[in-house]
Image (cartoon, rainbow, N blue to C red; front, side, top):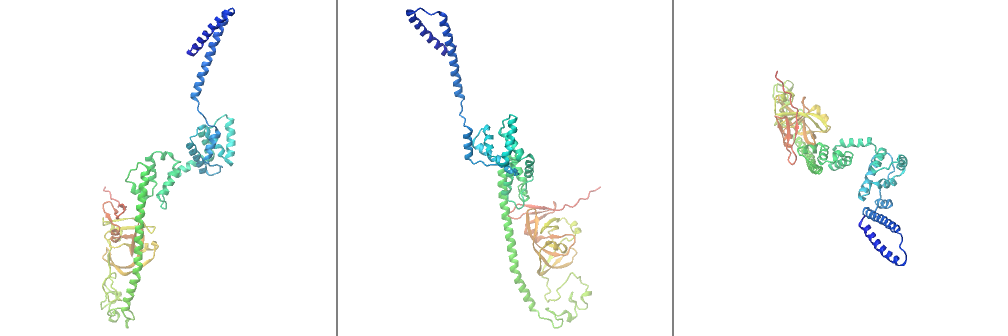
Length: 480
């Protein structure tokens, strides 16, 4: 028996003794069995009361006020949750669930009310779907949790096949030439939610983002190891800005050269016209020339010597002299070291390869022994640009000790080396084994040198990162 029960029983006994004393003086005493029964009843009552008090205390300790569903709904409606009407837009279904869950998290709602609050947001086709689904669930005696509701909802409006398509889009995502880094990053994060296995760890996320960058940026970041997505993003943005600045400077250089050529051309044309006006028309041959008239003298038009004519001249035809002018001095000289594959095989100081020029693949020879850059007559039609006449013809010394006169040039041709666009001027020259020869004029312009041992051309352009072109490596003969 507890202390409270003992105390109640003691008080009762004391009262009972007083009552018995008074009754003893006025009336005869009641039988003893009635007094014993009353004490037992009171003891049972005391125990029941004590148990009720204990239960009440436990109930008060475990009591937690719970808001009604109406109160949850009012809070939910204040955030203006979106409606969903169904349809074939799979991403709209995924976005609806995502927005609803963001509101649940903000309001810290319990799991048992989430389904009840989401159902009133369904409209149209989605409402009909839920009516049918609800009948099935209630028929099975089930009570859907939020995760179970999401699973059935996704099976209807965002099936696994669509999720796999989005995962493949993320895995194939690459930054295109027309896409800046921020646009690529936005697409990366948008599709990344379908591949959480790549997004949860920073190193995995950073590596995936780096591999999708375009070659010009990715190749320059390859020497660095990134441990966070934010780090690789900031480096890529900085590098992109630097590449854009360098490209802008090159474009300005191209425009300045083009402007300079246009300004110089009329001036030179005028000078040439004035020079021609200095020579009068010869009365003997009816042609304009300076000096003695070779026809009147009976001299060879090829070498200027008397005693034979140009058709039977023994002097090499490639070693020509101007025949219509008294100015016999050579105006410009050039040299080319190699013209054929045989010349290349005999030298270790040249590099060959295939590179797009004006978006057309060309067989190119890098030749530091060539003073100028040349294009073959056959390939020149593939450049898709207009040719111009040189102000003065150029005399080119070939490996066969011949002199070839050239006077046609193609300006502002674009050579594509990786992500770099390099400009060149090409003089037309008759050659067979190569489409293009890039000589010292072009190599020095872009601070390039030929690595003879590795067969590569290394570019160290001021203000840009070093890069190189790997040429064709000749096959080594194996000794038996």
